[in-house]
Each structure stands twice: as structure tokens, then as C-alpha cells.
Image (cartoon, rainbow, N blue to C red; front, top):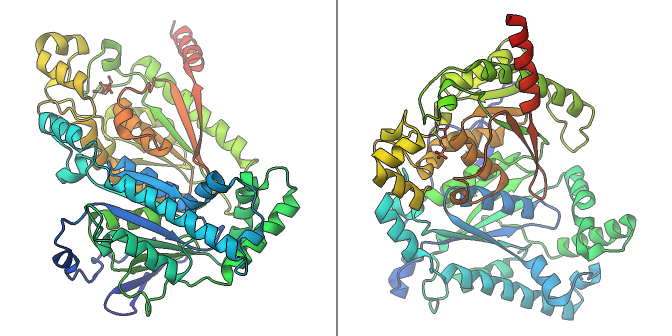
Length: 514
Ligand code: F6P
């Protein structure tokens, strides 16, 4: 096994270059956080919001990166939305422009592109300046308490807009800065809240796969043969290459930017500091294109489940133990199927599969058979323990309604933010579970998570890009595996109902006991 040594070098006092980001130095990254005097000049309240400006040639994974960022930030309760110039073009001009549209000698095309860019940017600014939900969210927070994080994040007060376009020239980037910091805006952005994320990719395999698998399926190439579409898209890339100016430290020293080279092989950071930029950076560092599968399952039936009791740390029932066996057989079966299927840019890792559990007995007992198979690595996480129901632990929902009606009502009114006395809310759980999410994204091998009802709702909302406040009543039944396969557009999801198999196994065991 080669050992990876982190190599870090300061190109100047403001930026840090990191090769092999999987192994980060444990010391904090030094960034220049010098106070800007921008708002002294403008005498305005600074906007708390952020804008991420994507930069890069076509087919460099910008939209994929933008979607990953949106999923992660929304899950962290930061309101995030994408504004895509390509979609705006199709909306304004209709799909189907040939590569000539992007030719630098096509002055009409240049004008139209400029206009589309401005319209997209204006929509982004309008969305950012709209703070309509603030009052409603603040009052909820006052009533039920926030999460384990600074108030402004739990109140969903911070917005992050992503401008998804090529933004490949210095002039264009300056135009974006000028608009976002315009002192006539109700709340102009501080320059360090505008983060440029440039994807530089020179790996022909990745570019080709991107064009073949994604670009030529766009409505721009409807009714066009694959070969023609590939040729035209390559011409479009050439047109961009003629005017492309990468972000360079010499000329754009004052920009906050992250350059991502060959999807995660190397990162360059400049003027990146603070909570939101830190989270953006963390998300980018874990992005990879390796195909993999994630299976989400609850533990098998527990003693407390049979009585409808909340929380606790009870053992599995006989049926629960049958599920442990059925789940093990199911995963082995699926692994065999996948072994023959995978075709992609990165070779999938099918061995050394990970199984994650919480520290509670019911999940560990469900992982029993995996622990005895050397092909699986079972890892226990405290942060995956079930929601702490506080004073309601060990009670049924009916008893809570009868004996603690104020708790019951508060939970009904806002299940996401409701924190039972001495317990935690779903919102609290997001910040508790977050370290497991970072690790999950980094993984390239298949992963089975044996969790709990509330924990799996939170994980499911992250994996599928659902807003976490909408997940608190999602059905996460026992004896069911949710399969999630991330792809370029989002995720593929399947549910496997293993109830019948569990019942058969149970009947077999009972007949053997007679
Ligand atoms: O009922 C099983 C359980 O895992 C409890 O331990 C936990 O309190 C509950 O589900 C969480 O689900 P909900 O938020 O819907 O009560």
C-alpha cells in the first residue's frame, strides 16, 4: 500500500495549495481574514448571503458540482438554489443552437450570451434579496428552540445562490462582482461572500465520458445522431478554449476562490475562511465520480418495537434476528449482481464493503453476520444513535399524548424543530450526524448503514436531496432496504421489501425449535 504524504505549499500569504486532499494537515489552514472596508464606504448592512460562481470550460462537471453543493448546503439548513445560464438560454431562445452560436466571431451570438448571462444573474439577485420566510422561521425558532448551531443557520436565514455558467473570462467575472456588490442593491454582497469555484479538468477520459453520457442527451441535440452531437459539442468546447482565462493568482488576488483540479486530485484555495465557505470547501473535497451503492436499513425488530416504546436500548426479537440473517444474504446477493454490471470511468470497488451501525444493541445485533465475514468491515458510530426522545423515552406515543400533552402538541406543531425536554430535535440530529455524512461522501466502496427510523430519515433526506424539514414523517419501515445509487443527474432509488423472506426464515426457525 503506498502511503500518501500530504504536500502543502503556500504560493503567497493568502493561498494554500493542497495535493492529495484526502490527507489534510491537521493544523488549521491559515487564510488572510483582513477586514474589508467595503461597507464603511457603502454605509450599508452587509448581506449575510453567499454566491458561488462556477467557472470552467464545458463538460468539466460544473453542474454536477453545483448540485452536490446544493444538496449539502440545503441539508445543513442553508437555503441554496442554482441559477443555470444554459437552461435560461434554452428558455429564452429555444434549444438547439449549434456550436457557431459560441464562435468568438459571431457578434450576434456574443450579444445574446451576454444578455442571457445578465438575465440569469438578475434572477439570482432577486432571489437572494427576497427574505420573505424570515419572520415565519424566526417565530418558529423562538417557540421551539434551534439546533446545535449558530442561530442564523438554524433559522434558515442564510441563503446561497449558485451561478452555474462557464464564466470563463476575467471581464465576465468582474461584471458579476460589480452587480453583486452594487451599492444600489438593498443589501450588497461583501466581496468575500462571492466564491468562485473553478473546475479545471484536463483528463480526456473524464471530459469524453461527460460529453458522451450527459451533454449529448441534452435537448440541444434532440433528433441529432450521437456522432454529430459529439462533434458539435467538441466544437463548442473549442470556441470557449479560445477565450478562456483561468483564475490566476496574479490578476485576481483579491478573489475568494477554490480551484478544483481533475475532480479532487488537487485544490487551490484563496481567501476562503468562515463557516459557510468552510462547508463549501469540505463538500468539494469529498466529491468523486466513482460509482457506488449505499443501502439504508433499519435494525431488525426490537423488543421495544413490539410494544411501541420510544427510544431505549433493547435486544432484537426472534424475528429481528431473522432479519439480520436475511439482510446479510440480501447484500451478498446484490454484491454478486453488481460485480458483473459495473462499467464506468473509475473502477468500482466492490470488496472491503463497509457496514455502519450505531452504538445501540439493536443495530449491532443486526450486523452480527457481517462481523463474522472478513469481506465486511463493521464500524460503529455514536453519531448514528437514534433520536434522543428525552422525557418521552420508554413511553408509547399514546402515553405521551395522555401524560405529556404539551410535549405532544409541540411535536405535532413543528416536528423538525421540536426538542423534547432533555432530548433532541431532528434539526439537532443533522449537526450530530454531519461527520458521518462527510465520511460517507469520501467512501468509494459499497456501504450498508444499519440505522434507526429518525436517523435514516435524516440520512435519506441528504442522499436524495430532500429538504430535511420535509423528512420527519417519511415512512422508513422495518425489514426494508432502501438502495441509493448516486449518478450525474441525482440518484436512483429502489426499495426492497424483505418481509416475506423474514417471515419464511422465522417459520423455519420456529419449526426447528418444535
Ligand atoms: O419508534 C421507533 C423509533 O426509532 C424511536 O426510538 C424514536 O423515538 C422514533 O422512532 C423516531 O421517530 P418519530 O420521530 O416519528 O417518533
